[in-house]
Length: 284
Image: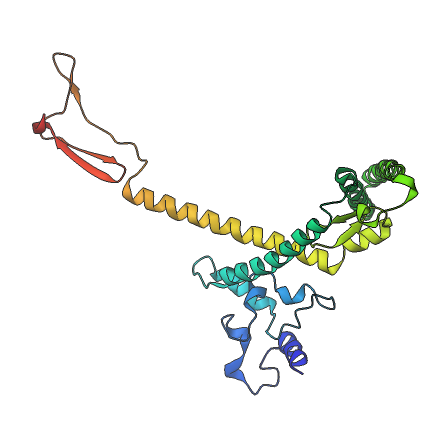
């Protein structure tokens, strides 16, 4: 019931029945029923719906108009929403990194050539990317690029087959150790096999769990880079206020003996690491 109400509220607004004019979330993105992560560009509850990692339906409002209003005002005021989202995404990422570490430990005693296994899976992903680019080029009316992508895909296929053949030849006595053919996805922590079909691997890389963690990593990186930029700008502003790093202009004249002499009455202010030193011509 709550999920259905949230959906109706998102589509039509809280005041959809005309009986709640003072509680209409479309008037202000700061309304408590508005989803703040959504305003920042990513609601984690939307990422893993209908998967084993489903966080449940978001019961808050997702309204594009409010997101636009927030985008217009966030540069002038710090509402703290991005900081809260950064903390939540960091927690989700920490959980999956622990999972990845555990899975990698399980394969640590593996005798298989990890480099070969990684190459096979990378070639598979590159093939998928080439296929997507070829399809896009066809839609864009660029047959030459589409043909180049198809040729690239065929080259990648041949390389993958060669590596698979080498891997099969390396299995002693024809006994296949399953663990030796596994690799841990460094994005979502799932086990992948070098013998998985291209379609199965494509389903993994395009699946909700993998794509969800790609979005989490990308968004968290974006938020952290923005935070670092703000810190750098703030530090620079403080240094400018203190005069640190600025070149000091000293007015002098050359004496009869070639020495540098400060004119009497001229006040020279030198800033050295935020300590102000004042000298006059009469102090010589």
